[in-house]
Image (cartoon, rainbow over all chains, first blue to last red; front, side, top):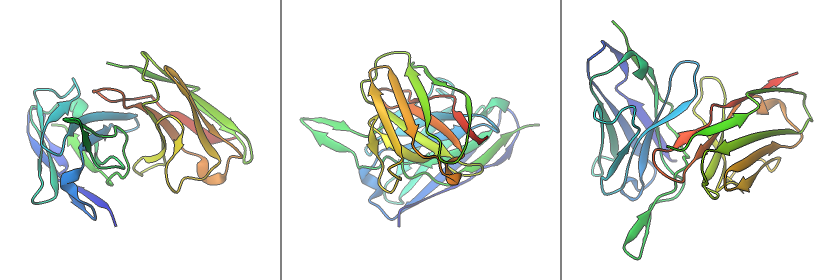
Length: 128
Length: 107
């Protein structure tokens, strides 16, 4: 069974740092791009960051320069290092995977940009 | 960045009704669009991808259409378990963006 399990959330003061982890199982982790998506309390969904199987990252403008996505394919784990946290970063953070593995053709690689499955999420609260 | 809008923001409906939700992208995204359903306290669930392809295991009463900038999600014969919030998402280019959501409530 495919599973994504986030951890590392909690209460942190403004300006502080936190590292989220997403432990993956039931599939070949190294073959998939992975993403973080967040949802502030009572609000909609916001894509935060993605990383290719080889480690190439992309970020939302709202977190660029403050958050860093990484992965350890040997540990089947995705990370999100968050720093300079703000109140507006308060949200449930979901780890998500596209339905199909990344595929490469003609020297270029492609990943689906939609997500299934998702983890259950981990709550990050930024408050003094 | 590509902005996504949805209408209506909420809709009241009864079991058995047909509900149609519209999503519009601020620029052409071809068919790089997905639809999700989210229930309270749960992660989103992928319903439709590539604008009109039904994800495995999703009931056939859900259907998607459109291309370019305008898309629809239709729920035929609404069931009690369909009362939820529905989001569209563009997957054409980074940063991926979601619509604000449409809440389907019981009339």
